[in-house]
Image (cartoon, one colour):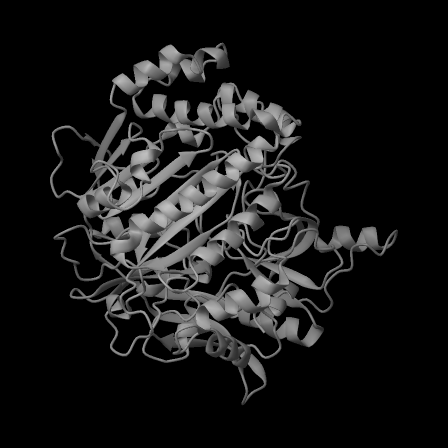
Length: 624
């Protein structure tokens, strides 16, 4: 399933646990997507080890004059889907924000660059690029070992939480829940750090349902928009050194740090929260795509817009080459409905947390070169979800379960006749966080379409119809570049009033910052297309889809922005590589409509880090 974060450090030692039927090591030989980073840690190399190696080779230069008291070692880097990896980059673990200041001044003096890293739950090359050489003068700064403090903040009338950059969202939401507080929506994974979420404008899915009144401390924009105060390491012109500086949300410059793409180092933030809301989440897989994604006015009362009007919070997951998407709808429910099962902890879809044997076997065939099995793989993913939601998954997890049995007509008929509903109820965090690191790891593109709420169904229909046409065209040519799912969510746009700070401005680089010239655009439709890394033709498909989207959502009726943590700027051979999209399309998507935006954000980030200590070559190209 999709997620949103810039950072991430995954699987940090020891063999990974293997769910029933899954031979993780065998599958990872074909694809890092199937269960995590197989080669991520081949052992940590300390400076002493590097010095010893240096006597024999120049491959491991030790950072010169490195500050004492901060742990330093070499460690391999790999992101969520395994597409970005680099062997043995220098890494350190600061204990305090002051240590980060020390590191910044050291890096400036020595001509090095610093890259914050958390749990590596990201797709885009915002931390480091793929195959970054071990000799590169770049130091990864692990925030997850010590920069994890969480404490209460705010007042009784305006409660808040103070958290350091390495605190993960699962811990942060658990802290809030312990105080009777929560957020309206958030990224689905718990293993993403606050620093990473803020860097890319992490979000979930939510707009107000029909008749819903927004409660104090709650909002429908990104997590970044909840920030009331933040502390960052910045350049002080008067002293010629890096220092810690705290920005109140009312300060104009803070708007550039709220979504910063890793171009700054935020060490701590204070976020507004509201009274927790119990939620009900109903899952169903019996509404066909022809209804759910119908053109406006169709759908027989079961279009995505219809469900959105009823609950305000929806997510659709449409597996490739299948007819019935998995639709989740959340709604505010103070008391447990009689049909709902009460839950108190997150991660309540165990069938998506591990990889059952039939999925592992078929995925193994795909990554071994049988890419034409993509339609069968899509059907299998649908059936696993359907069986899991109806509680009939136990046989699937047994090693003896046959793929042919799962794909039989009798099983499909039985499932459809059963109604395919799962009904959960509980505190918000138990329903909002549902992706574990053990899920199937795929690569994904990502975009947000800014539009009127009244046009949500039109946007959804345009996206899904264009996607399906492309998928069919490729299939007719004997090509199968997509074997995952389309995921669709809907949020509101950034409203600075949510944080409760007078004079607050929206995050300048947020994909869901409102367009001044289109005040009627009040929502964003987010969508991702997932596929296994290394699938032949996936980049060309990504380019074809991206060009279609740019043409369709050209700013007339709706407008397109990229989702920072995912894939975009496609060429026929790579993501994040099209110079036209990087140099013109993306910047202009923030300049359009007038008002502050791209150029101001770049200027502010450059002013507070003129030496670009917090940067990398990709960001140098993008933010110029």
